[in-house]
Structures are given as C-alpha cells and as structure tokens.
Image 1 (cartoon, rainbow over the protein chains, first blue to last red):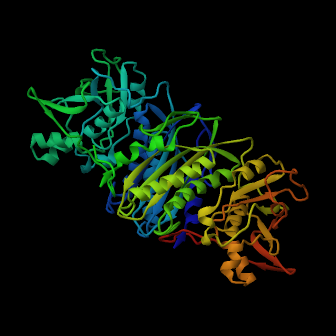
Image 2 (spheres, rainbow over the protein chains, first blue to last red; image 1 turned 135 degrees about the horizontal axis):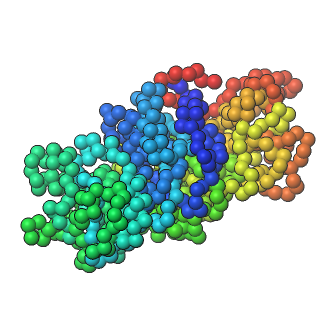
Length: 311
Length: 311
C-alpha cells in the first residue's frame, strides 16, 4: 500500500500553478488572490453507484465532477478561478485509477482556465466519492433563479434528455453562454438543468414566488439520445427530455417580446421560447392545442424518514 | 422517503445569513463579498469508518468536520468566513440523524463566526461522507509550513496523544492562537497537527528543504488521555503523544533565543520549546541524555498499489 503522502506530494506539480496563486497545494490551506471582491462558490460531490458506476472510465468521472460544479458557476454567469478536490478512495482505486481521475480533473479545469489549488485525500471501504468546490467571480451581474416573472418566455441552451447514454459524462459546462446571458438585461432568471427540466423549472418557479409555466411540447429540444432511448416513441422521447436530468444546459426566462442582442453563443433554437411563465402555480404541457397538467419530473436523491410530503 | 429538495429547502433559514452574503443557500452557487482580496481555502472530508463510527453522535461528527477545516485555517493564521457542506447520506441517516449533523455543523460554524453559504446533498448505499470547504482571509501575514530554519526551537500549542478517547471529536480549532502567532515576527513555520506530531513534523521539515529535528522527550506535553491509554507506562504514553494524531494543536518553529511577545493566548507550557530544528534530515528523541533516532509516527491513509516507497 502506498500512503496518501506519496500520492499528494506530486500533486502541486501535476496541477500546476496560475497567476494569483500565492500558496498552492501542499500547505494546510491554499492562499489565492481573488480577481474581484465578490466570489461565487459551489460544492458538488459525485458518488460511485449514483453519479457513475465502477466501470465508468475514471478520467470521465474526474471531468464530470469538475464540470458539474462549473455548470453551477455558468448558471450564475460567473467566471471560474479556483478548485478544491476532496477524494475518498476505496481499495479498488489504485495508482492507475487515481492517475486517470486526476487527469480528468485537470483536463476539465484547464478547459475552463480554472486552477486546482488544494483539497484532501482519505481512504474508505465504501464507494468512491469525489467532491469538488469551485470558486469563481461574477462578471457584471449575477444570474439568479428566483427572478422569473409572469409573462416571461422560457428558454434552454441545448437539447434535453437521454443524458445517461453518455452526455452526463461528456457535457461541457455552458460558461460562455452563462456570462453572455448575464450581460443581457432582458434575461430575468437562470438555472443549471441538473435534476430534470421540469423539476428544475418547478424549483425556479417556486423560488420566484410560486409561479407556474406552460411548456410548448413541440418546442422542447429533444436530444438524439432521448429519441434513441425512446426507440421512436415520440411521447416517450419527450418524457426523457422533460425529466431525465444531468443535461447541464441553462434554463432561463426573459422578458416576452424583447429579443436578446444579436450575435453571441446561442443557437437560433435556444433563442426560440419553449414556453412561458404564468401566474398560476403548476406545470402545463401544451400539445396540439391541448393543455395537460404534468408532474415535476426529475431525479430526486431519496433520503430516509420522510417528515414532509414531497411536492 | 423524503427527497433532497424538502431537506435542503429549509437550510438557508437554518444556517442563517451574515454580513457579506449576497446570495446564500438555495441557488446554483453562493455569492459572497470577501473581507480581503486574498482568500485562504481548504477542503477536508470525514468518512464513516475512518474518522468516526456509526455510533458516534452525529452532532459531534458535524462539529468535527467543520473544526478540522477551521484548524487548517488556524494553522495559516487566517480568519474563517464561509463554509460549504457536501453531505453523502446513507439510508440509515434519517431525518433525526440529519438534524443532529446539521446542528453540529452550525454550532461549530457559529463558534468561529463562519457562515454556511452552500453545499449539496446526495444519497449513497455506502458510508456517510461529509466534506466541508472553509474559506477565510489572512490577517496580516500567512503562516506556512515550509519556513522552518536550522536552530529554530519547536513548539506545540497544547497536549498531544490519546485523541481517540474523545478529543478528536471535541477539540476546538486554535484560531486565536494561529492569528496571534502570525503576528509574531520570530515565528517561522506553522502547521496543524492532524496525522501525528512526528509525521507532521517530518512533513514540515521536508517542506523546509530537508531538515531534521531533535525532540526533548521530557518536554513533550503528553495529554491525560495518552497517559490513560498507556495505563501508567510512560514510554507508551509518550508514543501516543508523538504519533496518535487528530490533536489539532499548532506545531510551530521560532527563532531560538528570541521570546514571543508577552500576553496573548499561549500557555506557559506552549512557550517552552519541545525540541529544535537541525540541519541533518531525520528525527531524534533526546531522553536522559541519550539521542535515539525515531520513525515519523502517525496516521497514513493507505492507498492501493504502492508505486513509490513510503518515506
């Protein structure tokens, strides 16, 4: 058995340094110079058996845990700066596996110009758990989820559904789109689609004071993977798009009738609304002129001992 | 089963807000105003079966994970500001258990005037893992571990050993002592004693360019718990003090012959040296005039597949 010290000793060199890093990996804590007075902070774990399996290539696991956090920063319109990585390693995670994990973490960090400045390693007999903390700074306005208004149009930045076929590992965090949206005064609320379009939408509407939404079934961008999972059943494909989650696209609302600035990173599809915000709480799917109430489909981590009813 | 949303919904209210929190718990990420341009960052997990057992009261687990991180900030001489908490919860961790955990986290945060601003929750079939990220700011100079010099005297801020009898759960992070030491120009290197006095000392000496140390066996502050574990065997008690770990006292070096400022939070015992830094790499215990080389006792997380020899 190697020990944690031999493993962590080379990590400072492996991850490299950056402008603003005063003390990087290797001391009790890192010391960094912040590019702005405000910081945007998030922290998300991935767990073997929940977010990936034993057979998922560990390079992809490393990318996923970093990119999940970067997608949260993207949804705030923030620019990433620093990452901290905590690894809880089981016995099956040997030298080669750890290297793959680290390479994935580094590759996702570099792609976003973020720097790993610290973290910790522990051993376990349980599943692999990797937790990343991402720290960034706002560029102008910060995008929040509790700012949707009645009459806003609803938009998503990319296709939805079928993430389990690979997108949940290979997605790129929409950092450029997030910052661009933050600069648009007509954009009201924004959020990362992680648990499922409808569930995340319900969260946004709830946070915005208990609003509702009508979704235009024909306008929802159903991914190729969602269609593949549904084997040609269009209704089933739509269901995947509405509830699968781990899409890590941006969901936002904007003032109706006011176009976004020309140019920028959005596809023309993302500029077209998928629905609109209404005053009555609840979610309605509009299909062939029929209006059908739908539940907030999505992934929920189940916790023991229910004490309050699920929504 | 309750879902994560019902659980996290009340957390913003539970943890409360603070000056400088622009967006707290509940959005994709938190937004905070930093009290200084520099941030001090660390991230440490606790794992069931490694850092605590199923029977450890969860309030103490919550305190421990926060205080471990605060001890790292203390060792930098930093002031804590923000905390992020990631919880990976197994089925046995029901509503009552989660509340206990949260109460422990909040109580340790409040004691240090730190604010929980975000985090995440996931479920697992494996052991409970709680990871905390602590973000603080330096107050003047930052204390580093790679600054020990030959001839420096060695000091520890409190008794060592026997932490498993309870101290590993009940310790208070030495934040006041850390900040006070950072203001003393004669203090050179400082570090949190977490893995074991000798192992952490070896890390400090190694980081300082490959130095060694002589430890005065009679000067080492052996805790009551270490003596209790040793059942009257003084040599065994000393061994516990030198290698048990999870003491979370500060280990520091200072210029020989130059006293620290009068007053301040140190006990007179902590002002007396426990040894001195020497040029030859290695650790020596000096006892009754005899000088005996000792290994770097301490706790090492074992990782699979040794590829480099342990030191």
